[in-house]
Length: 186
Image (tube, rainbow, N blue to C red; front, side):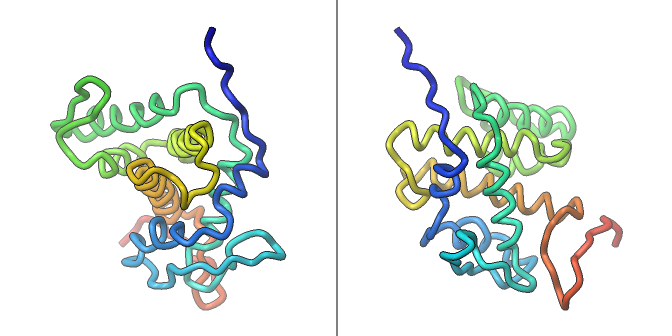
């Protein structure tokens, strides 16, 4: 008999990311070429990371809220495969799936590129939410406690989501009191 899939509450998902020592370094620091303000302070009263000017902290909070309210995907790898297949189809990259692994380029780069056709970052969010649920299934109830390879992959997905929010103009980043709107024009 197959074990039923555990559904975790939105509060458990939010707690998974709370007061992390690694979250900002692993998800926001890779975006330091966009904004150098990548360190986040936890606010125990709001139970969120403190938004700061020219920082992606507010976006990180928004993404955590999306993951907390997202229905658990049945097979999160399917959403990652969809992103990789878009990279293959749209960009004609010389990548291929062998067994369960995509080969031919860095996996996170494959997902980042495929996400340019992911309207509303739906597949990215479902892939990330699935990875959180899977970690909790294995008794890893906090981001900092995840197994290293899966931690790196989840952090990469969060970075990609926030990067794409900045690219599509839905970022909450504020510079000089004005919301940054990326029109995509140079």
